[in-house]
Image 1: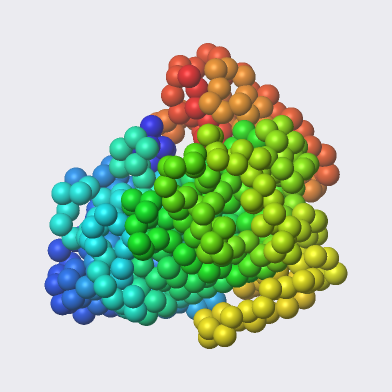
Image 2: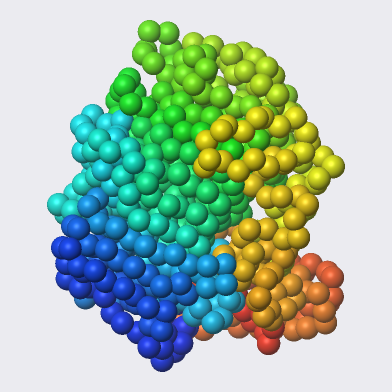
Length: 560
């Protein structure tokens, strides 16, 4: 079905890409010890797996656009396009707020912020950085997931915690996570054994089919990171990740996603090196408090991970709040032991809005806490005590607005008069951390956010505040997700208009041919439910396209 999707999108949007000044890049174009610069006057097309090879340096100018070829356009036989920086190479991709560096799909017209949206995932691979920092692994060297193990250049790990893979600043990675085989996709940004000498600031992952950002060991320091609408976890750490983070933002989509953060310790669990990062000022939004069909636990700690979250906000999830792995007695080290030893800490955080749950307990029906099957303490009293003793609260952070549609309704700033500015944890003396007077990733007193202007969240019209973006009435329409999906026959969705207008609704098959068409009249301010009877069509993937002079969006629907 992925090939059908790509063919359809190419049919719709191919006219914009080929008219641009483009440079196709293959693996052989960056050899060992090469010094290569990509400039902003070109669009670079990744043809399959492109490695920044041993000892090489790739410099990418601000404002440069890099696109991954779709799988059916790759000449090399690779299942996806991706950029992989090997452990002895470096990348310097330093954009600015006004001129970010954008990694995206071949079909993405950068000049049209309304051609793709949060549902367009898996259209190319992703970005992979490898280094030689220590791992919590069964061997000191590992191979990165998402690339066939037959490739010898995907090894990472070593003994240099300060290893330097270069720098990424103001980089937006969009619509990635191509499926290599069933259930095997590429993360938006994979960090394998990356050291603390690497600069990672102002990074966005938008609409990735796998995790947003995954840390495989190492000690990278990540600041100002936004992960939006990914089909798996937002942030994921494993293999002894020992770095630091501040100002991390995650928002999950309505239709897909797992945990906001999935946190694993090491392989094996009892490894002497295990994950133990420190994170301040995270803001994680789930799939919606009324959406129990998508999304997982907000915070999942397992495989004997340690780690610390301070001054953070977690809200708008349809499912449970926290799970700390608690194995049966005699089963070995677990994350509960890390918490009891003072290595797993949740302190001075705000939690609010988790499905229908209402009690700080592990009760199956009412409790915020998910207990581990067969747990030594099935009531999770150790976690409840930790929560209460460390200034965590369940209280409304009074977020400015949470929307998962490109209607300008997303304002992730909390209220300055609410719990986000009360009872803060002290910041460490480490110069990496910025001392601020609020909880969460965004300043409630600021005029806008650090994500304005350079992110897809901003340029596509999701964020309330726009900087330097010429908009085409993004709030003129709002289209909900299609339900049910997958479907056997009839499907439903809603349309909302801010003004008197009409819209054309088309159903297209996998070849891009219109097989059903109708028009609707929309009244300002009202929501109209649309019903489409698809019983006459065979099983497969189809697309519902809604368009007018001011609006264009396509959504996938699967029939079975």
